[in-house]
Image (cartoon, rainbow, N blue to C red; front, side, top):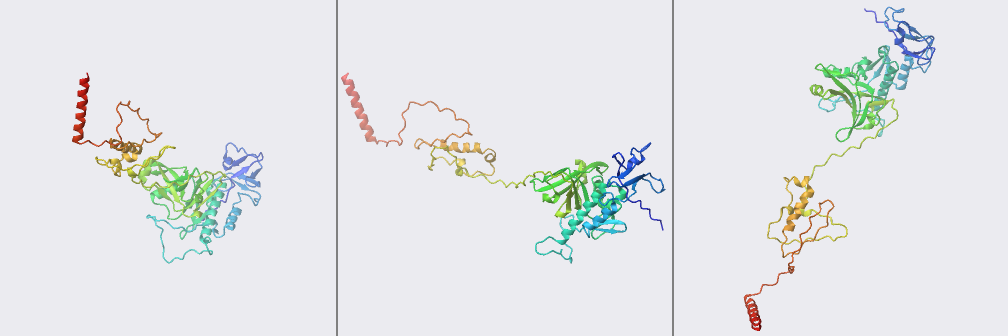
Length: 450
């Protein structure tokens, strides 16, 4: 039976020397000699530490590290044993200690299939409620588990994502594997491309994953601003048919508070079944980017931390445009007279000519009625003016509209007596003869006098 590998333990990542300068572990192997000046203190609590070169007294040791001489203080960030115990105490049941590891118990989550429908397994009892309209017990436990995942990420950040420290943690998949290495379950900005590449290649484990990173973009999204996104760009691209393609990591939701879409600061972590968009790799290769995205359907699936308190104002969702209705008939249009003028009352009068087109409903195949309504209104009024006969009273003059061009000056008046309002009755033949006789008598008398 092979001998199990010797566990090297947790290394102190930062120290402070006697001059108050901070150094990481790379300083131990600086040539010709390190720059720090002893005595050295732990960078987290100030207790005494010392440095050890690789292979100094252990043939299996390949890394240089700092080690403590005195015990850490209770609040030291580099006391991993103490911080692991705090994980178990802060959220009981979400982190368990087993086989020398702290294991996160991942909450169950419905997995959306390819058709977008949630599976409905039979024979499974519904979640237990606390009574009334209170929150579900399962939701409380799930939220506590995601908070524990955030605490583990922060611990690893304090240790500069040391792989040796990451080996101290693992995950338990819902109804699945119980010892998933933390580096395979939780991805950050430096290795989110590995999960995306596994999804492209079809080798990703069918379990929910946690992905975290610094927020670079937070805003409303969608054509009508009815969804929200927080996003960052991964450090490394993915490769599609040998071409590097930029990777974006995005959490999306229809509820801005669930993903903290009102601030662009701090970190974000999302838990669930991640997918790629667009789903067609060829399209992603042509456009030069692909998105590793998670649609957050429940508020406990995402958590934020290290925000600076600044917020942004999100635009209100836009109402989708209504379908354009048919324009009203010209007979129903009204012109608004200028202030102080009387509103004319139009009296329908019969006309020998057929009714103009402006008095009929506009047909659907008349685009000018929608694109140029003002011009169409002027064309509709012109046949009414042309249909006026001398027997009809002149129509009232409309008040000048400020939007219309000034009318040309009227032609000079002609010295013709105005027509009577009604034509005189036509005389019969006898009356016409008597008039002519009287005129003839008058003409003869005037000649005789001459």
